[in-house]
Image 1 (cartoon, chains in turn green, yellow, cyan, blue):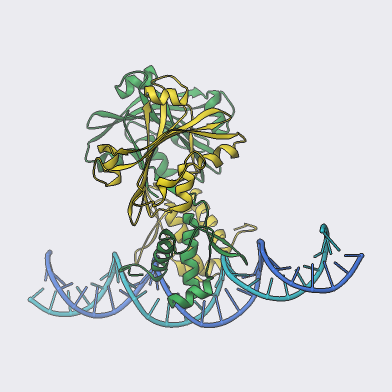
Image 2 (cartoon, chains in turn red, purple, brown, cyan):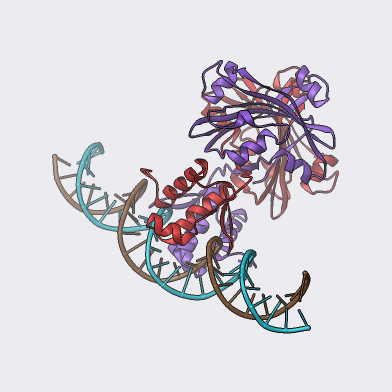
Length: 233
Length: 233
DNA sequence: GGTCACTCTATGTCTAAACTTAATTTATCT
DNA sequence: AGATAAATTAAGTTTAGACATAGAGTGACC
């Protein structure tokens, strides 16, 4: 517990984590209860509680009333992905951002997208295809459907001036989102937009967001070949 | 605030989230301070604090001492990925799990992996290649390097009986992990192991874990074509 | 042996109060 | 005006105490 700037709760978190990593407390072991640890560390029980809840969220501990706190046997730990705004991501990498809207029109919703958005097939949404560039090299190609019923005002926006992502994120916070990563071989269109060869392996991010009015938008983002999405634990 | 089983803090979290989503509190707005909200909701300030900290972690609020709490302008929200144990994932999908160790031997570490593990190039680690099957269809192929210096006992384990992932996860909790998703065209070996065609787009998960003794393991997991990794917000 | 009700305990949650700290605002001085 | 110091504010953290609640353990009863 030799943290410097950390709070007491954080110091306890680190110390307990250390005991687990150093196997002083083995997988499956029951650890001392909050009251005992509070005495050991010389803090209030609420502080120990905060520390242990953190580790439970992290996936290292199992906590149950009356049964006590146990070190997880199979710590299925989590990784968090921060999905940044493309422009910020590119600018942060020291490149110059630009983007191009390839197509913007009202179109009937294809079945596959309709299912993801829980909307009837064929209903007319805004369909937007655009490419984002860093230093004029294609960075990602997005294929997006926007539901004006959940995002009123979307019809009137000029998505050449502000990207759809930015406009939506700034104006329509979502309540729920579905998200999935996969890989696809570049189609002829993907290859053309990303200036790569057809068949190249592309990382695909598929995301649909909802507010209380229904699906806001569903987007398929294709990253340029070789791109890696970093996750932090 | 009409939650049923929720705690007061959670009820406040939901209510504040609703006000943001419904744009009663717009992006950039300063919201009432903790003391005011405590009065409005009839709870202690600590309870409001807990609720707002949750929303700040969620990425919806910006909180600064003295400056107050503001609705984030660009809510760059996070998604969490739970990396499950393959066997559990396959069994949960109702399939029968099996796996095959393709190769297990001590080999000198290639430069690329050495860099990821912060170990000297050419130092001899355990190199393991295996394939995991669901109902005898290849599900993922892994290429793993294990550092016995950080995971003592690894040399003696029979990875045919227990998968490396399970053994490591059960015995060596990590402190830090690097993780990245990308897409690659299947190499001849990938194609053979995953029973697909060469060049098929594969989702690749690259992960390296560390404890206080250094890098434990570095693994490249190639998923079968078409696999999608789901993230929850 | 199995079922039921009861007890007990460790965690979950909340409160009121106090103190700490970062950051802004205001006042003061040059 | 500009720089510097002091006051103020809102969040951050901790505490002691209280009560709620899930769920494991116990024992009575059939």
